[in-house]
Image (cartoon, rainbow, N blue to C red; front, side, top):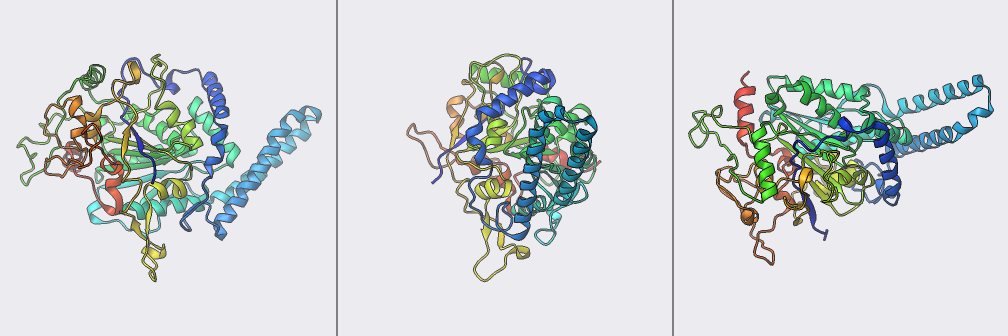
Length: 504
């Protein structure tokens, strides 16, 4: 049995807290990253470990295409390593010889990368695994991959995501340049805000989807370096896209390698109230979940437009999933989301979103994250599964989702700019219906962040030794509610998007 899962409420933000990328000296940030990477060398093998896999979609499964991809990566690694080692020797040769050697290396490297990545920037999940359904007509799912992912592994990621969540997935391919050059690119992106072709393509694609009047929800899945790129895309969107369109977005990350993640409140008063509650351990009134009735009004009789929807974040839902011994997660989200309690300088990083930290290793999306957190259900013996995949969909009997949640931080733990949301806002963000009542910190564990959709409370029957309710990951995970084509209960923001945005 796995150990308990750590859960972090979203950072609140405020005047004293800023994103590294906006205020930090890029050279200093780069030096910090180098030192951080060196301090985490013991976690380096966990990028690929453990090797256990469940089938053809796992990156290290020994079939012909996966072995071919691994061979290309080994060649790229050796080639790039020799190139870097040779740099000090350039002074021993004429400039023309050095220039010719660099040109030959770049041609070889680019040629191998072309074989690995193929053409095109956008890919789609295979329709034989899942096709668009009418009940999901207002949704569009987008995925941006991490480092070292060529066309074949990208397609495997898309197909497993599609089968897991029962929806077609559009992939914006972050093409690999080989392990060493991908790591260098990550450093440059994190610290110098460098936007390559894949980031520009992702921004263009997501912005187009947001302005599509037929869509009311854009779900973005990010993995590894893809979270750096997705975070930069989000920064650009926050600068120029209206907030009502941004409310369409939901973001879910795995093994997040970014050094910041922005998601401001839509209203200053909401932020001030959240900060006050966190500092003083006080309760406040939370916007209740709104349910639609037949006449186009909310369940309490008020129209959706009349409801005050100002307490939520600009991006309605952000969730991060990580392994505690994943090198990339340690280098990214786990380093920046849980700073020392004594850290209260204005340079403290802004990292928004609720986060789940599972004790374990592994960084690959399919083999380590999806197989551990959203595993597929094998098809019965003698059956080939959906589209010949060998699976029937996401496994409802999920060990990770049944794990007890340990609150990794509470509002009183992180003072100043590091303070985080308490149970109240975390519960509300998942669509918990608490009927607008005032909830004290002592009552936090009496509210389940899972709604029946009828405005009633759902309370987990298990209690700890203090008599307070204990919660499982599945009761806090919004992404889990999408498995196998399901949909989370609609809350006020979802309904507003359906009514206002869908009717433009």
